[in-house]
Image (spheres, rainbow, N blue to C red):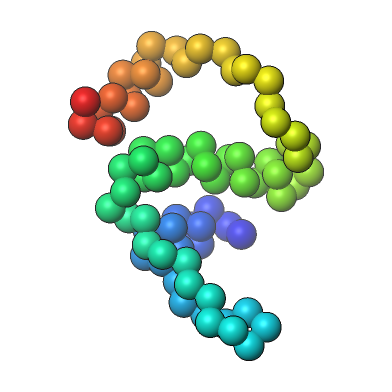
Length: 78
C-alpha cells in the first residue's frame, strides 16, 4: 500500500467486504496515540510487508534521541 493510501485509510477509516463479509477499519484520525506515530507505524508495516523485518519479537531498542522525545511530548500534548 502506498503511503498516501495508508494515511487516508488510517485517518478516515474504511468499510468494505472481504470474502462476502463486511469489513470495517475504524478511523484513527483523532487518536493521538496513532497519529503521533503514524510515520513509524507505516515504516514498520512496510518493512514487514517487504520482508526486511522478520516476524519475531525485537530486542530492546536504543533510547530515542532527545529531539524525538521532545517531538513526541509536543504531539501528545504533554
